[in-house]
Structure formats: structure tokens, C-alpha cells
Image (cartoon, rainbow, N blue to C red):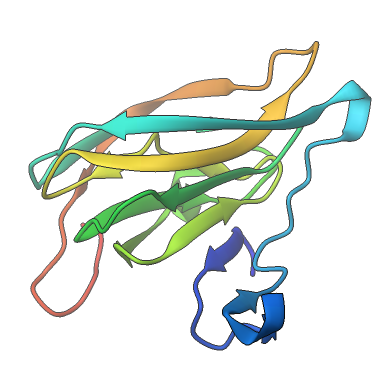
Length: 157
């Protein structure tokens, strides 16, 4: 995938473990955090709900590692706004609506908007990079981008 991985059970490789009492859904995302002395870091983010339309005024990227967002409890949905890694191009921005049972893993360097919970306070487990270098670049947008989703289909305006 051009922006990273969707973390979901549907279509994932899985097999029984622990004497058949547990089903393991295996290798759901590529966690890339170890370059330049990095290490995996696990955190929890509590996101406050946003009301649509949302004005997108900045984007961020993590140049030294991937960043995964995994819903900790059932959330109804959340928004994802991304642009390809490399030099930021506003014309390449894309928006997606994630179901509350899906996680997302942004690949190293992929531009994305900070977490956008939509309907309720939502907790997410975050797997990203800890290490000696700063790992978050932010860029303000010259022109705000209005994020809206139509019922039953996703689109960015």
C-alpha cells in the first residue's frame, strides 16, 4: 500500500495457537522503527471527537519510523488524511474513513493528519519509534482543506 498498512483481521493470515484456544492473526503491519538507534514505543492516545467538516490546516510525518494506530476499544469510525512520503504535495492528499475495528500503520515518512476521532472519545494504542532523534515534522498548509464525508461513501472536498 502506498501509505502503509490497514490493520484488520479480514483477509489476514491466521492460525490456532495455545492448544487451539486462541486464533493468531499474524504479521498485520510492517513496523519500521529500529534505524538510527530507534526502538519500539507503545503509547495510548485518547482522541477527542471532531465535528465534520474538519479544517485540515497542518500535516505531519515521522521521518525515522512508522506509526501505527490501533483502536483500543470499539470505536465507530475515524478519519485518515494522508499524502505520500517525500516532499509534501497538497494535491496528493487523500482522505479515508476507517471503521472502528480497523487500525492503520503509516509507513516511515508518510505525511498524515494527527488523529481524527469522529463520533466519541476514542482510545488508540500507538506503536511508533522512540529514540535519540526528533521524529515528528509538521508543515502548515497554505490553504485549509475541508474534510467532509458523504453518507455511505467517503470523499474529500
